[in-house]
Amino acid sequence: MLISHNQTARIAVGKYLVSPLAKPHGEGRYAASVSIRSGSGSATHDRVMRFSGLFDSAASALQYATEHALGWINERSAPALA
Image (cartoon, rainbow, N blue to C red; front, top):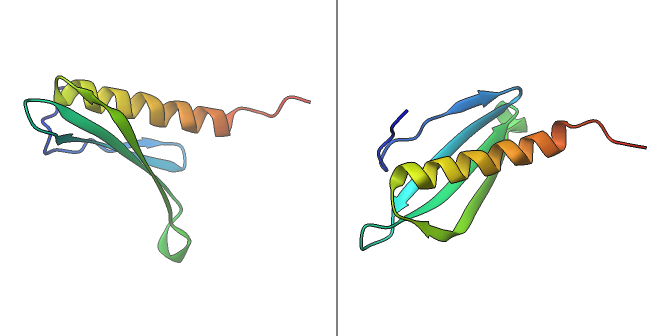
């Protein structure tokens, strides 16, 4: 899936909605961020991660943001080891 920097691909993962974003940062580089939303109505929680690195393409920035969001979700979904 190829996504330009001005589009957001929302991905539903269990109770979470993942929305990666690539923002132009000058000289053909892109910054990555992602929103991870859960809940609804007044109980909505939205975690936003902004990453410090720059990427050569919007697609690379979106992939990086998505991978980190999925990793964050997997950490919280894994059963606790005793």
